[in-house]
Image (cartoon, rainbow, N blue to C red):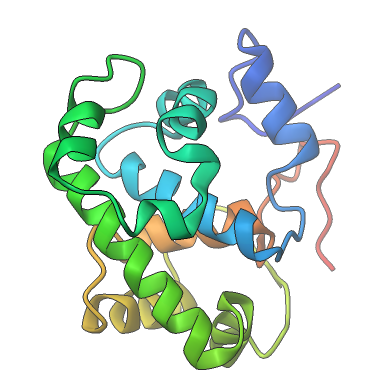
Length: 180
């Protein structure tokens, strides 16, 4: 079975993610939040690196319970910085907490984070391959940064939109490819 060329066929976690999660629409608030935080940790790293640590991130970040994460203090930050099972970048950890507060604010403003995203997407799925950014990821990235989020550049936002299924990008050779 042919898969997207980026999928490491020696990594069962990656294959599972590719086959059953990536580019599949999932707009549940908790999923949108988890993926946004995980994608922000990807900056400068590979998604495979983050994905391999996903379970550890879930444990370290209280199963991505938004109300808990927004209350993280210096003690929790130090605990995360000393957790060898996650990505221990102080700027990313601090940003994840601040980004969580902004995520909550956006969700309250729009009724849900997906409602916020629909402001940009018009509730449509985009089918495209071979890109790492587009006008949509630029617009969302710019707005999130204006609101104070960090580690949400256009490339990270594009990856996020693929992860949650707003952008469908399976390679033409992949068994999951479709163009509408």
